[in-house]
Image (tube, rainbow over all chains, first blue to last red; front, side, top):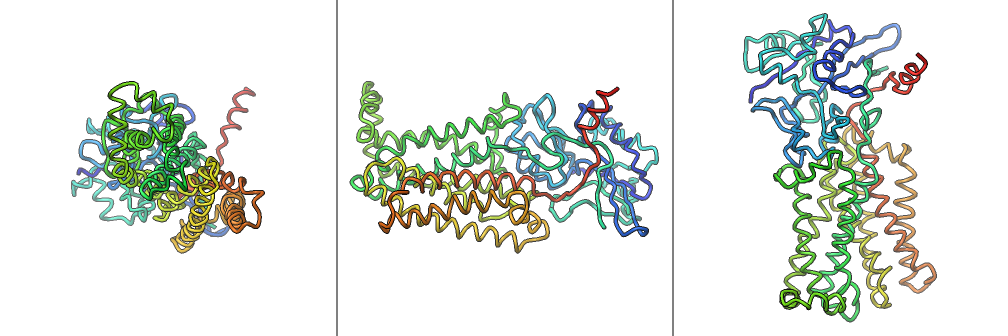
Length: 180
Length: 334
């Protein structure tokens, strides 16, 4: 399984939300629905506060419970990679995958009725391009690539920097990494 | 202080601010599916134990209700689907890791086996209907065959009905992302609750005193077992990880406290248990018909509260400043 990961540097992210706008434009996400979002996490007591910005989306988990619990096979791993996609022609809109996602990254497409979410812009990845959010980021804090290549930027970053993933204790094996 | 705030507009329908993807349609299906399982199990058990004299309704007529009740449940389940035209996709694949896929296929097997069960007692239970089937020679052959293999059919019904009753609970408990559901007891709890509601239905519909008494007895045992299972699920959550303990708060002081303790445990379990015991001991017969009605209400309340509290239980707790209503008002004022 080719492992595509996103590595986001929380130390250079300023929480501008350009990734969110880029996604909406690239993927024609309807008004009122969002495939990605930015979280501002604040810790401490004034004046000793520490703030972290995180651009979040589907984690394209290697062990994705949305895939294992989908009753029709609509939720699937794309082309033997960890990229999780939904085949709208197989989706009944039963919403099991929405309940199965510990990151609440999925939603019901309006007006379609099938389930939708971040695709890691697989249509761009196919052509060797970065996802729209990564290529738009004005601070260059977002990185995308394959972990199978030991010389890729993302492999290098994860070898040299401290990082975390979100809720790894769910066992889903998420593939969006945050440098801390 | 630790606060996680959504700083971009995220207001996904049914997801934010708390997950509320499933409403009464799914709760109703979970209830009616469990009731169907109970109906089929009791009809089969009464046949196997030759209870025609003591419990004629459950032995000869009850089974007819199974496909009717199940069809109502499947209709409400269909109403819940967001992509309705693609409902046939449940039957173009089998996903071994998805309890929902198992459920879809079990429902397909339940219908024919339920028809066999109905046919095996149709002549004695519903003679006008049997006369109608008997008009064609194939109908006569089918009725003859089902009557001859009545016991074998009853034995085959039980495992299918048990799986039907238990799978709805396993379906919910398989969602690791929803800590409130994440307990192995849920499958058995739903099965026992389904059987208890079916016993209550027999008490309501049977005419013979001996049958009402037998099923009141059965219901007392099942309610007692259900109380034990509810206690086990609560212990399982209370002794779990932080997420489980937090999930438990929704019925321990949180928004579902009254629905759970008053409507389900009080009105749905304890009061009917007391009324049934009073009825059996001959102390008070005046409220005898109230108990089974309360059991049915409690059965539905269980599904509704477990579904609601469960889908809201979560691993993420983001607060948001974004208000779609405010945005709408700003747009209108322009």
